[in-house]
Image 1 (cartoon, protein in one colour):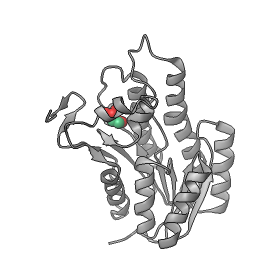
Image 2: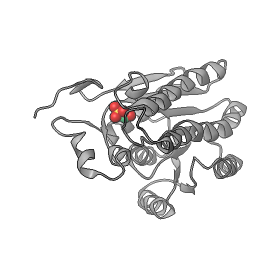
Image 3: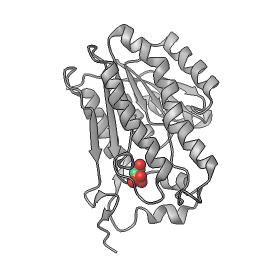
Length: 255
Ligand code: 8X3
């Protein structure tokens, strides 16, 4: 069953990790994908790769934390395309430090990208979805938004906000066909920890050692499943963990 063929999806943060994996799978399903990122070269590279085999692929380059740029570019997309699917995967963790020692700039970066950026994009696209009475918004939450862990402080808070925003969007879209789903993964091996630890690859690698973490593709499969279910089904939340990790504290490592 493929209910997605011919639809139009905007994927934010599409040049790496979960965003890239889901963009590829959407393209494979015959979806016209708009790839968003901050690096035009990476976007062009991915576009060329996907376009060879699949559908119409567009790119849009801007930083979701730049309000003006973000609103202008997203508005231009809405003027040009009917967006059926919005995947809000742009976001990051910056730092892992005790609250009283953590960097205020890290706090701001996470709040700007994970909450404000997501709001700017979604707020611009939502009226079109309502007008068309059609659309599916996928927000990338985290186990961190459900269960806090030491030094997670503001990252956990931003992901809790994403979870709650997903709930309240569902409430505000009551009576429409628009669906909102929040994906809450545990440990996924991507560039996530490398970014969190600001390029300290050794430290980042350690996060995923001694057990099998999730892959970006594991999450992309779930997203495709959620998007592809019949229109009367709205999967609002999904907690997806590695089998070895039952929650942030219970992680079975082999070494
Ligand atoms: C990613 C999962 O547990 O590293 O959001 O915060 S975790």
